[in-house]
Each structure stands twice: as C-alpha cells, then as structure tokens.
Image (cartoon, rainbow over all chains, first blue to last red; front, side):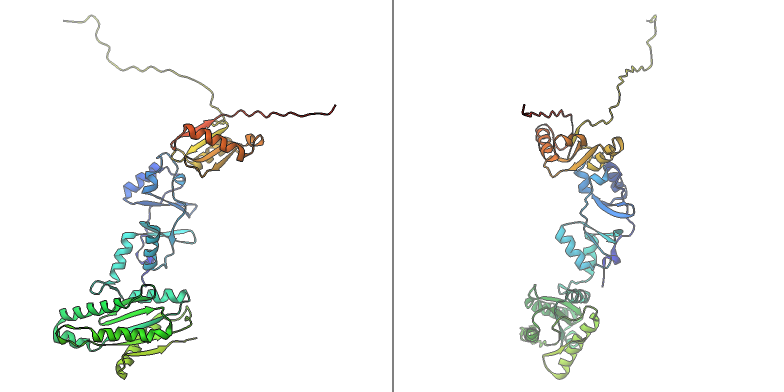
Length: 278
Length: 118
C-alpha cells in the first residue's frame, strides 16, 4: 500500500526557533518552499508557513511566529488517510514525523498526484490498492466487513466481438450500475482489474448476499446496446464479528475472488463464503 | 571670471553625542506586547531573563490586542496579578494597537488605616 513514506520529500529546509522571521522569509524565497519546519534540539517544535510570515513582524523570532499546533502523520500513514487529514484541516503541507523527529514533508499537490495513480479514469472508481487500504482500515478499527467481488462473465468475448471501444463502454456502464448501488456510508467500490469490480461493505453480513444479487441482477437486466448480453457473477466473503487485525488482507480479498469463480462454475449469480479464521 | 577663494569641495559631518545611563532593567515595571509587535513573548522572556533574571514574570494573554505582559514580580507583592493585570490592559487598550509594545511605570501606594483601642 502506498504510504506517505513513498512520496515524502526527505530533503527538508528547516528553521531554528531563534531565527528571525525575516531570515525565515528569505530562506523560503531562496529555496522556493512554502513552509519551514522548526527544529529545536533535534525535535520538531513547530512549523512556520508563509501565512505566519505575512502575519508577523519580520523582527520577531520564529518561535514567536510559528504554528505550534502541528498536524503530523507517521511515515506509515496511507495516502488516502493523509488526503483526508489535509482536507479536514485545510492545510497545504503535511509534516511526516515519528517520535518527535522530523522525517519528511508532503504537499497536498504531491498527495493528489499520487492518489490519481490509484484512480481509474475510465470508470471513475478507485483501483485495487484502495480496496486493500479500506479493508485494512476497517479491520484495524475492528469493524466487521464483507467484500463483494463482481466478475463479468465472458467479457473477453465482448471485446473480441464488439471491439475494445464498446468493451470500455460496457465497463463504464457497469461501474455506473455499481455506483448506483453504493451507500457512501456503507460501501466502498473499486475497479479491481480488467472486468473485475469489488465493493467492500460494512452492511450486516446477513444482507450482503442479497446486496450482491441486486447488483448482479441490475447488470443483467440493463438495456445493453445492440442486444448485447452482459452478465456477472459475484463472490462474497463476509465475516461477523470483525476479523483479527493481523489477518492477511490479500488472502481475504483472494477468497472473495475465488468465490466469484465458484459462482461461475456452479452457475449461480452469487456465491458466499464465511471467513472466520481464528 | 575668477574667484579669490575656490569652493570648498568635500563632505562634512556634524556629530552630536547625547550620553545617558542605560537603565537596568530597561523595561521598568510593566511591558505589554501587542500581537503583531516587533518582538514576541519568547523574545521578551529571553530579554528579561538575560537582563534581570528572576525579577519579572512573563504572562501569555488571550486578548484581542495583546499577546503577553511582563510584570515586575515585586509589584505582585502589593497587588495580586488578577487584580493588577486587568487595570493595565484596560489602560493600554485605550492607546495601543497590535503593533505596539507599551512600557509602563507604576506607582502603587498601599494605604492602611487601623483603629487601635486606647
């Protein structure tokens, strides 16, 4: 999973608390940065931003002008969590620190650039890595979850028969059908790969199979152009109560994937597996 | 045409010196620091600690105009901080802005009247 450690800038220009605001401003201009973390005795003491500089007399000490209420993240923070923090606190830069030691800095722009790599522009859904992120997050927070793994049946034939442009159009519309079934508070959809989609959901386990069936039926009953017949099979893995936080998330997702294969083999629209690994 | 005396070419400087003794401490009794003053609370603290160690107390303020006040500790033996500070801030607010650093000198007279049985 991509974390801020993968994208943070490690070469950081810092200020001393006893530098003047004027000097800090000159450093920001010289190095073309919008903020300077302030280090005192090797520890992160605060951050002085261009806004702090605008609001302070240049004669002041940095310690009298800096922001002391620092919002920091650890290097292992995922880029999605980091983006949430940036939005929540309306900040442009995120300081990466651990045990009071400054490790790096990430700008909002860098974060969104990285997030863009995990976003599928064809369908407007997140890619597979988001699935791992959200699954891990729910498990860490001890929230029971299920994964609905949706695999289009014989999609290769659609590409061969109608061409990739039409194939892409089908994927786009399937994504829209899935989105129409998403409750933002309960469901987290993604395009897993190719013609495979997944929805991580925190709906009650007893309702997930029915939820998956609704999506599969909606795909099958959609009014596809040119009499195309598009169907899908879904694999569901669910568990209640929540699984242990040290479980292998990839294994968990893989079970959902295999469940969708079983659904195809058995000729049923949805196949459900209960995951209860102690 | 010729001049009997040529123009004096050159630059002159006139130096006047005013000497006085540097007051220690230079801040007298009270210093009130505006939020956008050229010095902030930490700088003030360092200054008074260096010039007059242990004689002043630096109080950080939650105030519209001022960020900190420095009070001579000996004054607080006459009047407690919670009584003295509002008076100072009220008077300073009337004349100061966020950019100001106000120096104040206080004269405190404590009047005592006692009735003694004869």
